[in-house]
Image (cartoon, rainbow, N blue to C red; front, side, top):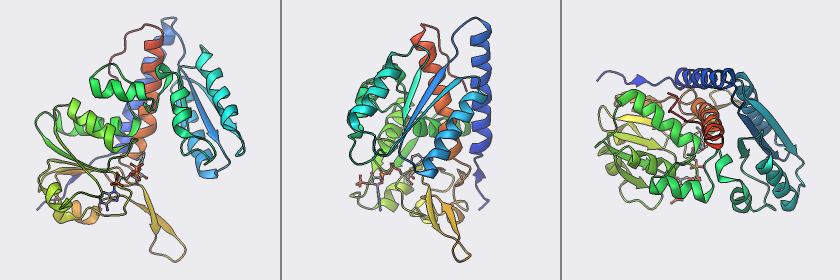
Length: 297
Ligand code: NDP
């Protein structure tokens, strides 16, 4: 059996960012608005700060205006809600992202619900969730949309293909399944109560792994030639003492022998998430200004 094609998420993400930058430049050259993206982080977690700064850096590289709001860990729910309200009312801000998870004393859903759905670039607001399900114009969660972009680049049409989504979180699993359904795939959603997970997987042309369990999906779970998208990001002990490494939810070394195409970790789905965030900020800006928005990639 020949080895699977490795899907290069870094390359597709770079193409997507370049396409977004070109659209932003054209928008500005035509006298249109400059898309503005605001990212709000509560707390001093260094990894989250790096992540947020990276989002803002990428937004600026695409020609957007970026607004960083780093709030202290003891920020109250009311204070955070008032920051969101100000951003909702600010016409130069087209996209708002509140970095999750929030500290335990803040109700995340209440904060998500307070974001103007038109500016909800994470696609987590119930209005956008509902529109995704009912087929309206929705801002769609970044990671699953990035997965669909990778799949369509690889396979063309997904119509009629059997897909399994491992995981049913609001952030990845559920919107992933809805997006695959929107592409006319036949979708199975699996989770921790699913019987015979390996057997369910072996029936699928497309496997999306989003369980947060290091290397759980084994090579013999994969139908020969299937396309495997590994969303998982798990830090595990590395070969050298005291060192760690990142692995996905799929046992890559095994699956690459069986699959037709597979995303690596790192370098697969991960880079797509921020690129899609920028795409969503552009879409939000266009829609708020009654400008047409055509798919970027
Ligand atoms: P959650 O922990 O919110 O959800 C995990 C899901 O997997 C749940 O639905 C759970 O089932 C299911 N699950 C857990 N263990 C098993 C098991 N043994 N068998 C079958 N199903 C199982 O995780 P997220 O959805 O937020 O994230 C999933 C993974 O994706 C993580 O590794 C995360 O780090 C990564 N991630 C990557 C992103 C990226 O940019 N690449 C972005 C977001 C997440 P149940 O509902 O029954 O408990």
